[in-house]
Length: 312
Image 1 (cartoon, rainbow, N blue to C red):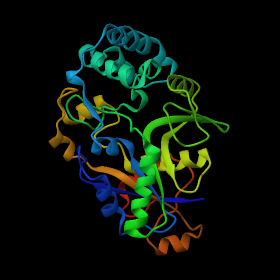
Image 2 (image 1 turned 45 degrees about the horizontal axis):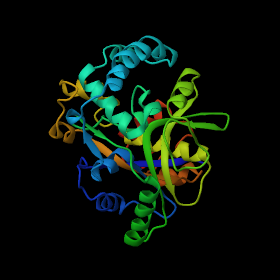
Image 3 (image 1 turned 120 degrees about the vertical axis):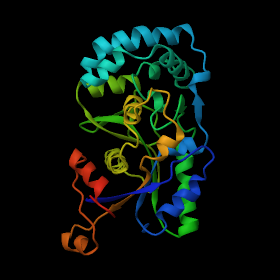
């Protein structure tokens, strides 16, 4: 089945923003019955105020050990190569910031536990990208309930029957019908292995796709949910950067010197509509739509970023 995608640009979401109103206003003119609405987890987490200021955290001894020994030596010298990381990321791990890094690992230990804290990035859904200063977003408390809430609001406000998916760019790794998720998900058919999912998936080059954290609507197979999550994530893009280092480099400042005003200059597209498309190319052309391929490669991501309206 071909899938069309359209990402919606909104203002940068801040704590306290009414995510319900933003979602409805963004999709009201485009949504059709049978569409799938994908919403970014980090945007929802920020709007709900699920953020922590890591500069105010006092790291313990174990957090400092993780920073110096585990991140700089084990990841920087051994596991980074084993997991086929890019040289730039390995260099960053070898120079992992001692003060900021220890505070971050302390937050991870307190919020998501030891095994998730062993990961090099995005531990258990804790994210510092596309956030200012020393702020980090925490995983949603109940993504399944939130997906249902958004679906019900769409039905009541717009009168449309649509499915809702909450997506995190954190990866789930797949091979021959087996799906290892690197963080908890409410979608059935995925096995959460945390740190081990990341290690196995990266080391053995399993197929990596964004993780659907929750789904509200008719149940879909895990492979289809992963495909949709991957398409949604590529349509959205990466905002200010894929990592905190990329974000800081983009603005030419230190890791904790990005501010709200800088982020508001960046194109943010936290909402995506995915639509099963007709297999007739002429009917799509008449609507100004573009058929999507099954793959989620780089070319597809580029088209999603530059073609107005629905694209494949």
